Length: 230
Image (tube, rainbow, N blue to C red; front, side):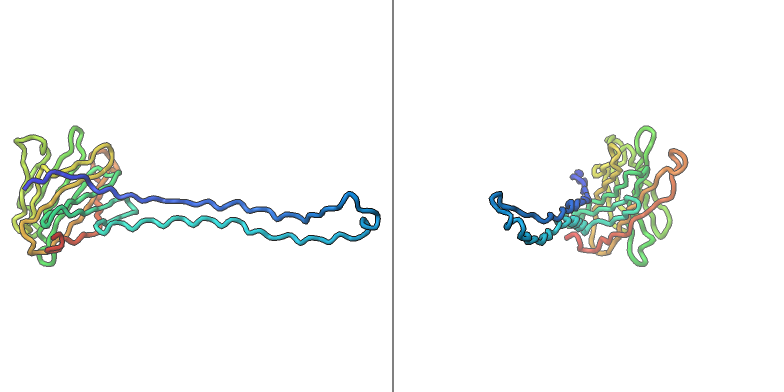
């Protein structure tokens, strides 16, 4: 069931600004007189030339921004981005990114009457290493918590499956935030595709004191429908 983590999505927005050209001045009237012209010629009034207006260079319009990937749920006001990538017919790679976060959460839930069944994966910054927990919730009640913090240790918990949602996680498929990029990636695998599910990403910071989490801020739900990844 283990899936080795592939590279996570990187979503970039490019802003292009254009500069207007400087306006050009209108040329003044010009005239020429022949050095051999006599007094009669000098007395003859010169015909004036009408200045020709030259249009200024048009300003270059700003380039249009690209269309975001359909698998992204973006919260631009906070910088939170949830990206969903199909791995195969039964698996997706979910990434929640927020460079200001100190904790990251991915929640897989049922739909309709099964919305009270959830699998919550939480990664929180620690003083030595991040803590990782996976909480199994049935009918709104916690029935089990897996501590995956030592996922690099062969003796640590390897992962597990939600009993009613039939979604599994494996410690081998975690990609933790590194170098301040604020990106958590987890591969989720379904044991069947009979029921629609949703995936929500959330982040929290330390608005007051270090290690005291502020409120969670969640993205919109991404629908993981039955057969959608096939």
